[in-house]
Image (cartoon, rainbow, N blue to C red; front, side, top):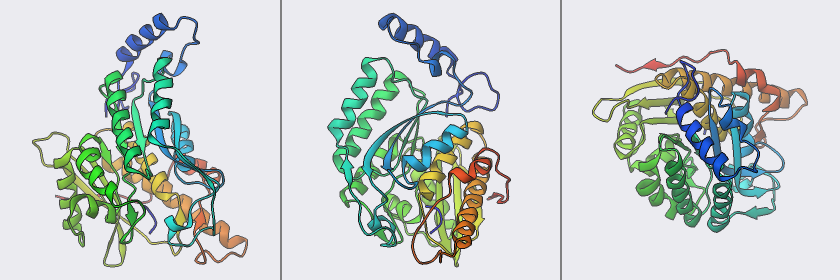
Length: 349
């Protein structure tokens, strides 16, 4: 309920190194477009990366890109958002009917997404170290995402694709059922990191998860399909929440796996899955060989933010169990930048 790699720069702890590639790309860009201003995030690369984030957007509240972009920027990333939908507020049906009674807005289609990619390409702006995707509402849009992956990897073969396969939760699909097979057969194989919740992991693997061992086996199934990093962000086991992470560093090796036990907070929050995936991207790139450490930092940030959100709602006399709660993202900047690790990973033997 609560939760829904190459080396850049010269930093020894960074997950990506693209200094040579950015120089080549920058030189080509300047030759092809001498009148254009330099793209400083390439000319002066950071120790983190450039992220293209394709997710939903709400005018009010923090879900999708509104929940993911700001934390990544706080962690030092340049982030370019594309909004798969633009709504006035989050949609009640996505939140167990515990949200707002209505919403209005627009939905981006696959052709419109591709036009944006073409516009970036025409101006030599397609060099990204990471692609991040979240809620996708149609098969056509998801198929265009696959074309985007191919296009970005033609520019940067080391692109890391972090996919949050937003399908549903608690036994209920949020999206058309046809998307499940597209994710399973086409998206999972090209993803670098996958961050499903329990229900989504079951949908993608066809494997029922009822224990830690089941969660680890689901990770193994997903590794075999493609991604080297898998984090099942929330599994309910005997009434408690578990995160199970798995990193297969080499295809012929057994993955390193761990769990983090997370206390339940008596409330329902919006945007937590989107935030969790962005934090996992941010920290796993900084600690590319230590997914457990990245997960500790991400979970600790998120839990501190959720506790602040809960306390703030209570402070104004609001019953936090009466509806879903908008997270206090801006007020939790210090917890995002410098989290105090309060939740430790336990490695499996």
